[in-house]
Image (cartoon, rainbow, N blue to C red; front, top):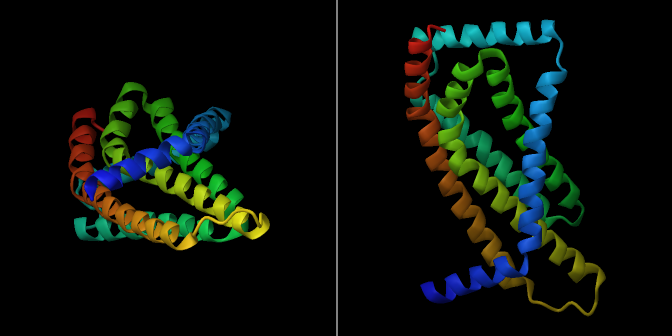
Length: 213
């Protein structure tokens, strides 16, 4: 059973490797664009944003941030809603371009966050970005990319089934696999949320304290 699942997954990846590659490139284009947006901000805008960021650092050092459980739930529901939206858009025929836009925006947010921290705090900002953003995103980003790619694939097959009468691949097995992918994504998201709620605040606090922020 495991061998058949592995072979099926590998074959599907090879068949749609160009879509996966496109999705990865699109996400990193968003990251680059987000970093560029930081450089296009005025000095006043950067100062105002950094002021609020400094207030947040003060709350971290004084342990005035939300409880770990609240952070976990907030992260879990936020990322699950994003994954769920992408999944639903994959079912709809008109959702294909929206999936691509959402993934690009996600990359843009990551690029902007890291770019702003590095722009304002140099190496301290880079270290802080690694501690606060990298751990959970090592899981979240691959999950988003894979789910976006699967949603694009499913959407394309739905379009073919609707408009190409010669396309007769059964939809039920594909839909079952699509549901399984959503369940697996939510499980990984819960793990990432646990890291964001329980590990990242500890790392951030140690870095904020050592950097004197």
